[in-house]
Amino acid sequence: MASPASANMNAVRETMDVLLEISRLLNTGLDMESLSICVRLCEQGINPEALSSVIKELRRASDSLKASENSTSQG
Amino acid sequence: MSVCDGSSITELLSTLCDRSLTGLSWKRRALGTMSRDSARRTLRKRAYGALLAGLFQDGSPKPPPNALSNTPARNKILMISFDLRVSGHDEEAERLEELLSHLQDGAGLSELNSALELLVQLAGSVAPPPQSF
Image 1: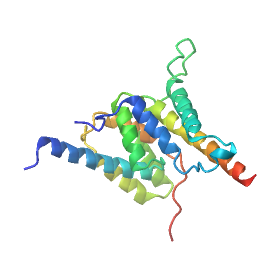
Image 2 (image 1 turned 90 degrees about the vertical axis):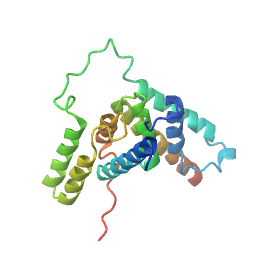
Image 3 (image 1 turned 180 degrees about the vertical axis):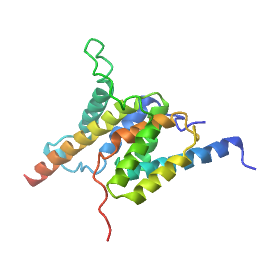
Image 4 (image 1 turned 90 degrees about the horizontal axis):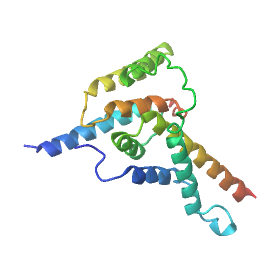
């Protein structure tokens, strides 16, 4: 018989799988690892709206780094 | 037990920043472009800036609450599902509602509603995958 801890771990895993599929249907751009980090941050009390701003800001910053890298490599 | 065992907010945010650097090449560092450490610092600064932006605005007038601000995340997802149906994406809408019904209260996570709210906030933030024929 499964221990309560492993049963709960299975419940968390199943919930994460469902959240990932919802995330894909909604086109959020999160992969499993990023989603897992975000869920952990929510569990630590981070406001989900503030967290979405962080993700969007990181995408913008990463895109501009990639753009500057491309312009450097072409120059 | 929850999924937040073992990592602090700062560690988790750092990991999130590092993941954003995936795909960048560092071969040109010697040629004067930004180093990985410098890029990492830039991303962390912008991440904390975005995270803390709403905290220090006590003196500024707050925007009026809109009708959706108090709507539970599950209901917002059902509204998205309705929009999908209206635009002819019945299969996706069906699947979305089915998945939502699988998520019981808690379901192993203490902040399931926050996680759903995050997904709502990020909905449509990337282009949908190309359709296969």
